[in-house]
Image (cartoon, rainbow, N blue to C red; front, side, top):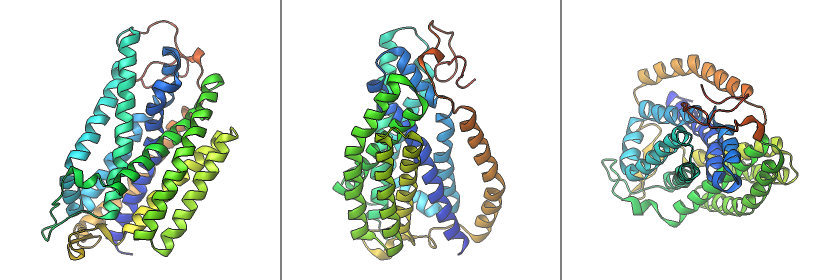
Length: 350
């Protein structure tokens, strides 16, 4: 295995981490206006992801940075061709971050409700568009001999891309509902369980159709196995959620997302961005990669610092593993703070 292939696999791992970790806090944001029946309950929901949501986004930055450094031609073609879609995702992520910062600044039900719906929009739009983007990467897009994307936004909104978007939207919502079942108690936990069960009824058939179409069109023997395992993990996770075993359910949906990404990247290899204009114009692991020396330096940096980052993030999740209740939320307005609403005594970000 050469270094270009190594970095292709590492980028797939980074996207897996992003979808697993950012996926559940997208799901929490999508469910926020529906599961929280009053401001205190919505503050509980926000604070389940308060200490970790911005750290989860680091996986996206790392995946993008690794793509830029290891495969500059892939990065250039993809980010220019998908520019408007990625701009919409970026705008949604900015709005979402601002919402977490601003919803507690004014003690007004209307103010907070407006920001809560903005959190919903800022979570739902990226959840949909990431699926659209990755479905089109696997399917291929029109690229000319100069590796320039020749389509537009409507080119990406084909039926397969939209199906991929609905799959990620439903999977992230399911993942978030199960996460809320892990982190809350009482009536909130029961509502999260019901939301997980109902969302699974949409997520399972959508994912099954998408994986089946993907494997028929682009599949390989190895990815047929990972696709089947992803389906089994999803069904097992949904069954565990129905029985109220949130830890097993969360493991099931997390494994589903990891295996789904493995399937898509496995189907893609050795291409990184297929051309539907002419297969000779496709970007591959070898013709899109950086120079060997660049990859060597990047590999040493990754080997040194990746374990440190993983250890720190694992420690963060361990510290903030406690279930949250209404009693953890202050009953009176608190002074303005940076980040999601303050929790007592559990605590959000400083």
